Length: 236
Image 1: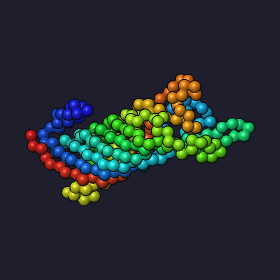
Image 2: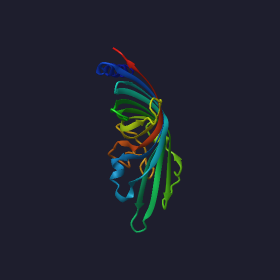
Image 3: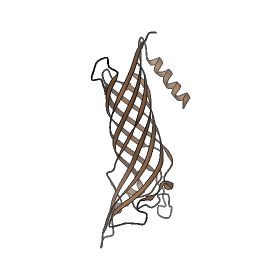
Image 4: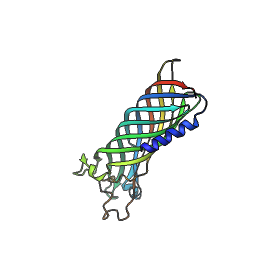
C-alpha cells in the first residue's frame, strides 16, 4: 500500500509543471445514503423476496494532498449500511413482511482526486471496509424467533469496494481557509460480503441455495462537510 501511494505521489509530481500549488485539506464530513446488498439468489425468489429501500449514514474526517489540480486523499468514516427487503409468502393466505439487515461499518477510502478550475472536483478510488455488527429485524405477518438477532457470523468481516464521486469545495470568503463541502458519492462492493437473505436464511447454505451467488454492497448518496485548506506555491 505504501509503495502504491508513493507511486501515485510521484505521478502527481511529474504531472505538475511550472509553479505547482501544494494544497493540504483537512475535512470533516457526513453523508446520508441509499444502501443495498444484492444477491442473485434473492432476486430469483419473485414476490417471496424483493428489495426495499433502506437508508444509512456515515461520518468522519479526511485528509487530501494536492499538487496543482491533482491529488490523493484518505478518509476514516464510521456509520452503518442497511439492506431492506419485503415480500409475500403463500397465495391462499398470503403473509406480508418487511425485514432489514443493519451493518455497523467503518471505511477507509483511498482516492485519486482531480480539481476543476473553480470549486468542483472529481474523485475515484478503492475503499477498505469492515463490519463490526450485523443485526436482522423482521416485521409484519411473518415473525421468526430470529427477530433482532445477531447475524454477524454470516457476514464477511472485511471487503473491498470501488468508489466514485464529485463535489465542490465552496469558499464563501476570499483568502479564508474554511470552506463548505458538498457532493455525491457512489460505492460498489466487488468482494462477496456473504450474509443472509430476506428471511434470515444463510446465503451460504447449500441445502437452500445449491448454486452459491455473491452478495454485493451498493450505496449512493449526498454528503456535506467543512474543509480547512492550507496552500503555497512550489517554485521549481
